[in-house]
Length: 259
Image (tube, rainbow, N blue to C red):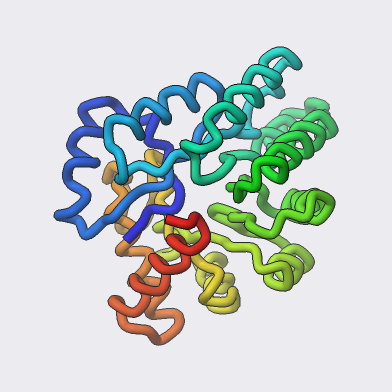
């Protein structure tokens, strides 16, 4: 299988060595490694160079952090443009739902506009480079992301760990956007309901490691092998065998990322 979304640069070198050398024994082909900012992009690139074929890098700027200064953004865009041939996608990019919610809960103002402008610029870059995008855009932010994707005529969009309103779900299905499920599909009814209705040909499996999970995964470090648990849970929801589900999710990921 393929882990469609993982933050490899957040693991230690010893963890990476054990994890990436052990992929075959866990029946894993490769991992799509996303990035958070320029420093993160550089580390992701270095990891991909150490493990060629097993790590498929994506470069971007995660929205759950302060908006970069103009010079910082220009440097990031220049770097991504220079290394576009190395990457499978631009990501992780999107909108800061959780940061905004936390600020509002504290009674603080939060300016969303600069983040929308940032996403607009990064989507323009993806369109220019003809690369798919990996999106952090949940709940009402997914609607804004759909608007911007349509503005830039981007059809290859992957909404990772997606949750969102009916309006967004319908638009995403109509546009053929992909989503991915994490191990929380095993124990989260909200995610299971979405998994039942989203077209099987537009679904992938991810771990978002090293993010920790609950339920049967509580207390366990997040490992790419958990995509097999995602596939098994998704199979049960659709009446597939585990092997059928693994094959379908892997084929979807390989096709989307042109692996």
